[in-house]
Image (tube, rainbow, N blue to C red; front, side):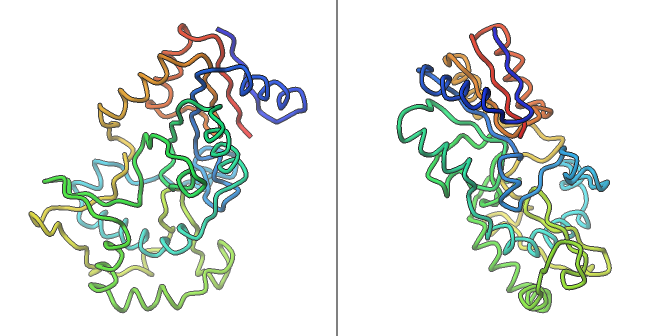
Length: 270
């Protein structure tokens, strides 16, 4: 198999990618957080990503075992939702949607949870889920995030009023109270700015714990979803990776499998 790693887009690489798009009949595309950074949503692993400041995302195990962790997560996520959903698709999102509509992309998989591909007109397999849905970990009941936001607002009117009146300003500025947008839609807030009694809605069906419909660190991609990604990869003749370091096991597993199976793997970092 031929592997092409593209750290920067030279004229040669652009022409090469044109040929990939032109001659591939079953192209699979995998996108990561790097495709959304110019939209104002940071990634984790780039030099200026969330990890560079010492940030560590909540884990699946922490979310399940700690009420305090869930309260912190939802308070910060509620605070960041307006800014997160204001992000617009980038030129890359729109170009991929155009390639799909033209029949040049056979299947798309994204590690992102931001739904920017959908807003650009694509319908990718969301490997890690999406923050636009909320699910019950006990009974599986699902609701859209906008309804959940309304519930949070109703239960926490003082917090909601403070957030809605806040001028976010630039990240880290005085106007933003030092708030920083995070990759999964929440905002980093000093503990003194979120209240210990922040109330979280429970499942209306079974009173269970609600979580965003995403694969947290430490959790596994649902088998059916992982199988769909693997099946698409098995049948492709070229595999294009955009904006991903392929450091998560779910993405690495696909690339590792493909090493011995297809003719071309192209990875574009930036």
